[in-house]
Length: 517
Image 1: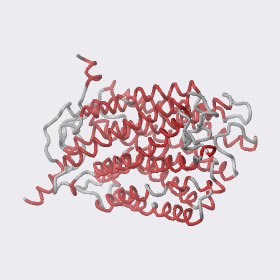
Image 2: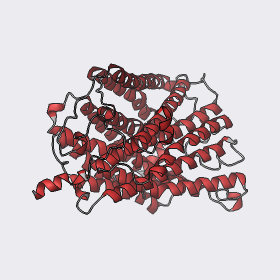
Image 3: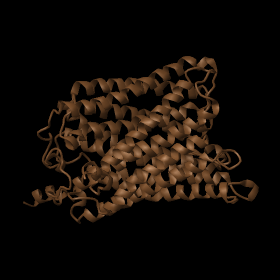
Image 4: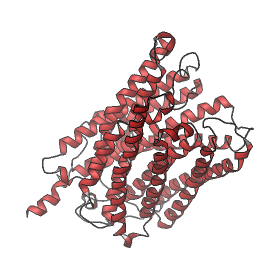
């Protein structure tokens, strides 16, 4: 069948590849939309696109980056590829459902594109009444269909991951699993808890728009604030869904770099992730301080949001300790990316602590400060973990190495672009410049132009990474073996890993057998 095999495959590696290709497409679509946003804001009044189309762009940019780039690449792509290898099994437990979840992304992407044509300028949060039938076109219906399909895809993938991990875990193997397995388990549990709530919310919104119901319409006894509760009950755990796989791979790489057989503070890191899952599920109200929450509710959401900094700090200090004893590998580019991730994620976390205070959030809500905060956490945090995943696992997947000097140039280009683009937004937000508005006072022109230049450099760095991957495949600088301790199962695999490999069994127990002997 040749290349037709890819369309009917059930192999977890090829399905991971399909996810990755779809995710790269979604990422470049989101990148193109973000460049349009920055181009429009490069001039205070003479915008590249009209104000209505500007709203279409910001909606599609947010949806594309979260649902069609980060989730397919981090969870669908690398999760599918790595989990069976780390668990020592030939494939995921439900391979046909796995294939279905991958191919559901295609109609979902199609609906998103149609929604832009029909007009979907409601923001990625699509609050009613703006998203109600009287204020927006038929594009919003297609946006809802798109999210439904993407949600079903993620739910099927989550169920598959949970079944696979529990099916492959023996009573003695649990404490020997790679931290990446734990990260994907907690990610899947979060998705399983939060996605049905989003599905319920957008289903009610579809009924309001098309069948005359009044779930969110006050004139019929509905409550528009109810939708915000439903949306953010999904929306905040979604942030941790996008960062937990990155936490897992950074812990794994730090362990390998320090040439240890086990992580520093293994159970501390696992329980820190568990704490993030539990706390992250009960803080959705900090997105809604402006709706008029009573004082006790606001204090609860503020306090618990601040407490999330504790398990995150546990992880950061564990990474720093492991990096401190791996100074021999300091000139490895992946170590630079991990240090860059820690710095950028910490900046995003500190601004998050500022926004968690309900009094300060009243001032900074819906300003560019909020945009700077979540881009430092997501655009710089989660995207950095995507780059780390690619750099670290590329030799395992393809059998070819990446050019070290090109990677160093890419790192500096990316860091310059990221910080030039997003750091000035903190000042714009503190000055009170509102987000989602395409015209602004000329006083802010210089900083917006600096942001535009940073966005341009970031876009160049994305194409630079593609060039590095292409150069690796063309030059064919083959990797003989993977560096690291043999206690890590992926360090003793044949490179590149063959399809349908069944030559491993219970790798998580190797360390245990060594102790018994």
